[in-house]
Length: 274
Length: 274
View (cartoon, each protein chain N blue to C red):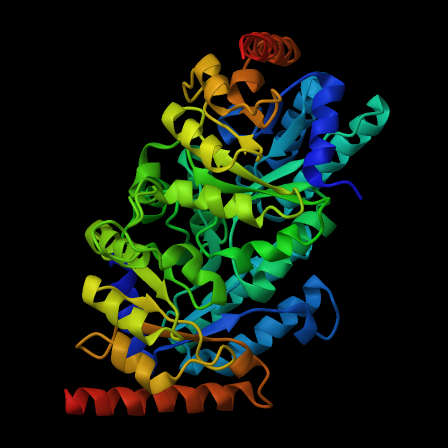
């Protein structure tokens, strides 16, 4: 089997896009506070944006909040992405945004839940518990993880920016560990697009890894400086997740197309000037 | 409303126990690999051990792995603990072991899922994303959290033992932050009972906080040295979670009673010798 990031890069080439469409059925954006409405919201978004999606990223919390029915809706949305991929003849990776992190048999159960039952391709994880908490998720090269590294929220500095005795920041250390652990080409990093300096530092610490870089749009990241700081030399290596910026647009498909093209243009000019 | 830890201490006094019964319906321990079997396993354990339980701790992963049906089973187990509490006339706190950690509206959704829909009293969280990721969970003093601090797994040192520029270990820094953040008496720490030195350091950094200290029994912690290192001066401040050690016993109620008594005896001798 190909590795997760080979799979992702194939899709990136197929759709000429670095966009990761977040499926965040926040209750305020739904027609009703129900799991059915969450499902409909996501199915519509999948249908309208699939042409421009390098990946889809459903957020577990917004389904979990509806209990058992939400869990069924999540599975339906993932199935719909796979059906849409088959229809297009280009498989779109699904990244479960769950930020799990546990040990031993508990980590095994979360991995089974995500990769076998829900049948997603990738999951976001917290690195706080160390390598053995990651291991059940990276055993198969075709399944991937994005480890939290430097996140986009105001409180991210409370731990992530701590200076270690060797001078590294904690998040740089996480990036270096991920670069070492990435023996099967299936580990990436979450690095907020709002932190340009962090993007540069993490890119230096992990030259080959893919980043999932939230913060563009609703969270206020500047796209060009983020891409300049974070893209790899091959013009890949960064997935740009957007959710509200596309979902709340009058025409989500158009909003996704425009953002895809904007990213493409910046990327082309960066490669041309490199 | 009383704070979460006042509530817990009341229950600790009522049952003279520091035991936290883990509800981990691992598929290998079930009569069948189904959500129904997971429910039955937990309901039996709740019934047999409730007299000796200062708290119950269902682990989300072992329910989540059964998808929507697992989520329903989890809710049924939590409801059964509340019914059993009412029957006994002493409310037993429920700690959802979920190790969640996310930001903004996503953290709000996880908090709503745990505290409103599932109606648990407390949840385990990862501290990696910083204070704003904790905030939605600690807003109400009667709802509590245990933050991962120094965990019991082999890889816990990968991040948690890193030495900071000020000489503290990362987990000590987390303990100090938790001590500061604990304005409403509803933040505790997860500190593995397998790490005696860590228990001492965390107790020094956070003299008042409650610890959830896994690792006794199946994970091999030594009970007496752990209690000596981690108990507060008032003989409280440590919950000892056990799951397999009780669940796999021929008579789980008897195993829980014996462990409760063993902890009590050690605690009495420590207080007498203090």
